[in-house]
Image 1 (tube, each protein chain N blue to C red):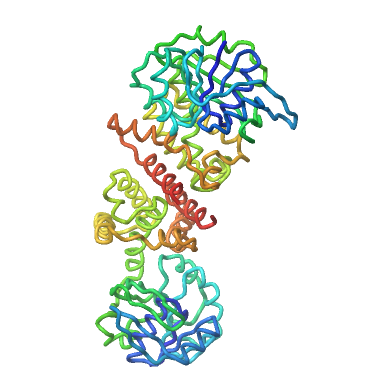
Image 2 (tube, rainbow over the protein chains, first blue to last red):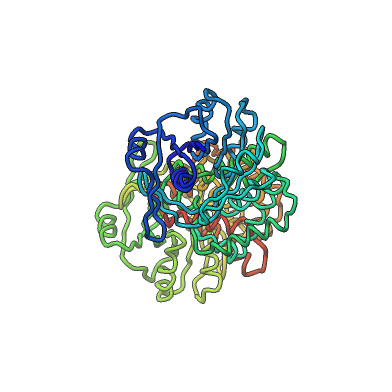
Length: 293
Length: 293
């Protein structure tokens, strides 16, 4: 099959490498330099100090003729991608953004494409325009979103390498909210407090504050099973207790965070539906203020 | 009378200038350079672009023989000052720190001195080792704290310049908590959100969050009149709507903030008395994290 990957960041290169084992993969990048480099050298995967290579094509703009397009750019870059998808023939498009901000971008999007959404739980660090290090083995999970059926993608994703499992989930909302509730509880607090994930549990006041954030978020998301979700949040804090959250790392590096995708979505949802939110707007404002600094 | 001012910062120089009109004033500083400069040139006050001079002495260490000593150093510098006050003859000592962190330092202090506490509502900016600009005219308010009687100081403070009024208040706890509740509501939030004071009212979510901080703080402080205190907090936000709070200014300048004196006191009080606090520990942790950055 022919697969197009939109975006040549860590997730894009990781997907491109693993999908290349069974498919013809093209990476769509914005920079001619990266396009040329991938066309010349393919993609290199670094894992446990070993290196692996995959042949892969690259091109400058999104084109027709692909069985699946996977959008791997960050949510705030999606506004540059959606218009270019308007000019190509209807196909399958899978969105792999963090958070849920992109749902507001695509839910009212008029398009003939079959839309899918998914999550990426791998650790991956881009090393160069053509190389990615696979630092943590997880999974890609995907679901149908609109105008789509699972059969169209199941065939594409079967038989992937065991280090890159791909799972189908029946309920996209459950899939994305299940990840969002964890991110919104852990990321902004650790970024503001400059603490490792485990400290949100070990300091009683921080845990209580996290609980207040959780309660506000779960009311907006209308989670089915609140206890299960809270246990999962605490479980991730414990399992990753020595880690710095991605938002903390972004804040320390002076980079733009994923505050819009993660907290901004919830603040907007609360506003749209007339729900009261106090902690989430405060956290959102504080993180955006840190970014501006 | 003989007055000793401990600390040659903005508040110390301001007090030294105005008190010099009726008293013999000595400024106790830590730096020999500043001591020499004050002894050579006195103190210069800048107000509305005009300059005024006062003769004034300076010395390196605190000594006996003063009718009143005024401690104007920041709360976190007090631990270096208290031991030196142990070695001199009993006199009147007035503490003019922001916040209430210093109350924990002096409440169990074994001393024969007569203790007073007070607040400074002037705007003052130190321009050099000997010069201070009086940017906002307010008042000094003081009260007896322990082993002290108002008569001892009333005579010293009478007849001050109309730009430097000094008022006696009967209840030290009411005096300090009345100022602390305002600082704890406005300062940490504006510093985290990087907003001017007025935005805490104009953004509904920020106002609601400020209300939560207020409720936690007023329960710890056991304020008599909660409604009156909340109205005062909102009134100060309105009156200073275009101002940056001192904590925001400190954070922007990468300086140590007065988080310990303002929020730290409340967090410690809550801990000592087994009261639950969630927002104050979170704000305290976040501001301390920003300082460390």
